[in-house]
Amino acid sequence: MKAALLSLVISTLAPSATSGTSVTSGTYGTSGPPSASSGSALTTGSKRSKKSKDKALKVDEKNVTKNKKNKADKKSKKGKVLESKPAEEPAKAPTDVATEETTAPTVTDPDAKVWPPVFTQLDLKNFPNGPILQPTTTAEATTMGWSKVNQPCDPKLGEAWMVGGQRDINTPMTIFFTPEVAGAVGVPSGLVLDYYGNIEKNQVGSYFSDEFTAKDGTYHSVAIALREDNVCDTSTSKAPGNKPYVAVAPYMANIIIPTTESAPKLAENFLEGSCIIAMGYHWFHDVVGGAKLTYEAKNLMPVVPMYSSIDGTINGIMFVASEIKQVQDSNGDWNQNHWDKSIGLAEDNTKASVAVNVFCNNFCGTCEFSGSTDGYYSNLHWFFKDTQSPTSKDFEKCGKTGFSPVDPFDCRSGVYPVGDRVSIQNFFPTVHGDQVSIQEFFG
View 1: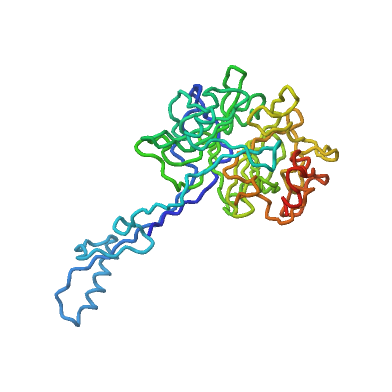
View 2: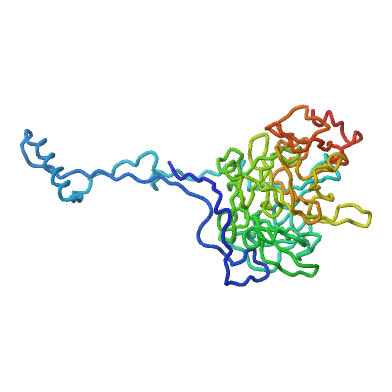
């Protein structure tokens, strides 16, 4: 039986920036591929040594015990193992050691799927009528207006696909897929979000890339790897059943996010926040304090994992920016790019008293943030499940039945950072009785 046990760990939390290698457009780190460190620990069983049979001693039966004792004394005095004749029959392998002879043939699970099976985003304007769907195969990407970018396959991320095949401030997300092989579609292997405007400069080289210039302005990028195998391999198509994997800034900080809420490394390095309907439990990491947040914008890791109240598995991730990143259209609606379609979340908790959604609603306990550029934080939620459709098995209600229609937040500690929390109607402006009864929807 195979004994390899894969345990996800968080790699170095504040790595030093590397230097001396310039970055060309299309790369997602400051110095190219990092050292061989993968950011995860692999613990394996060790094979026990076999006892070989000593050559039969031609002595009388009454002297056998004495001879064995003498041999043992000689080994001890010489300080080395005496050579002996190889065993006539191979010893049976221990049950906790994998051998080629005992390896069972691989059986494909007919229900296995490629992970992640879906990409969804919050549809704040039309909730609860389902999420915004994004492509999870190269075929879907083509149909939905995405095109492969003319650049080499990235060893950790895959092949880049952008809306219309080019970088644009209104479509700042790049989805990476594995190559198409012999007619088989490519599957998700990475994400890169371009941050136009302000970013936390102290995180350049650890979480944010260097600055690049595009036709519509300068930007920095945050990369996410979603597979740990050879994503550029074209010898065979990717089989379903791959393990969930999320690594932030794989060429720099290489923070591997646990994919289950029960993983010890999560509580060791992240702080539990609130559960929000249609999203899940948020967990935050501080680049200085780890699970002990400094509550300064410059120190908050820009990627926040969210976990299911149903089974504890990762629901998705939330990208965070310390200024408004959304763009208004001609009608004044915040509805133009991949960032969540709203003005953002206020830094000032007192604005909650006038029905403004504040950033600290994502947290539990004491929360007072500072350091945003314009007094707001923007979020971009990117899910690996459909957590928003009432008919979905993954519909997220934070483990409650009869979730209060006036409060979309839940803190397991029972301590909320903001007294005047916004209602579901304010959080999701289009939850009205003409769509579906709120009581029935959350009942």
